[in-house]
Image (tube, rainbow, N blue to C red; front, side, top):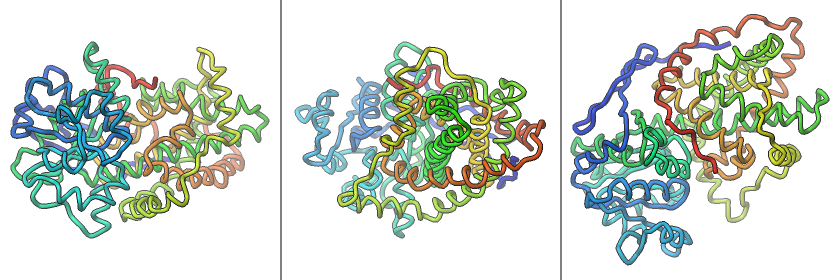
Length: 499
């Protein structure tokens, strides 16, 4: 069953001195948003007034995309984009190949770049932020702006009893997709209006009342079609929680448990993988992305619908408490402490890969033989996944997160960003190649989701005397469906690129 009991939510509004901000009502609560586009590039000098140099520090997933997008968007404005890397980093070669150079002053050692930047966008790994934050803070120019694309550093500072320097503004712009897609869709946006990756932004510290416009300018320059407001605290909590739940951890646990269930029912490995994984990352994902959650239930046969509803009920019930536990662990700072502690062990105990298990070897074979026709939606798989997704949605509602954030990070980012990569390359590939923070969280919590299904949810289905014909309690009338419908109008014009 689903619940919609929530903490009282306040209007999520913001204003800009530069851009035309619009509002939307989501489940009775007003939220502001900015509609992006290249026609706004001429406003960037005004939004970024006083900024002569933007330092993009780091060359991981987001660094190459953000540095190149900013450079292209700001061409001719006089605002210089400079990449900063650790001394001796192998990424100097890649940055030079992307057109940044020590010769023209657009590439340099990270602390030198920070000292010379009016806006420093910090895109190094979470563990490196925790390790180097004092040196970074010391290097920041007084009166400048520190930009983040993830709230991990705030969470770390809270666990350490520290704060951001009082003499800088602190903002965040967080793309809802991986760095390579941020770049590829920006490039497509030169020809296709609306191509890009949506973002959320936050203002943590504002020295002069200009921080919101700086954040919005940064988002527009990245090519974001739509920008929504959050807080840095809300972002780090929802992001870490989501990684450990429906974005990665829960998906990994779900497909592992379903694969074993279908094998136990007599399916061949290939058929079990089709039902457990290909159906989820293919037609189930596409249906939610284009038509919404209810459409999954509507497209099933009567037998498939009964399977959906049985699986939905037991999965929601089994996962709701586990997700509350994960949420509490994130809010308390325990997950951040766990990430920092694990990073210190990596030299002795490198993180292992999961792709070599029998299931993922089968998956590799299935993908190589993949035909143009996708497998049908499996009702039981769909019910399991949707039950998990709604458990996450309700957990965030109950903790007062804005609906734009809930829908974007629990549903839209899952079906429009991460699952397409999983379909193209495998769930295990994503688990092995995402950020260190996400990999650790997935390995820690994925097996818990798998165990909840195998030990509690699936036996509960087997013990049911009757197959429910009615829809799961509250599912069809949940307000998230209308929210998702409204926000679907704001999805990027081009699907995410996974090539």
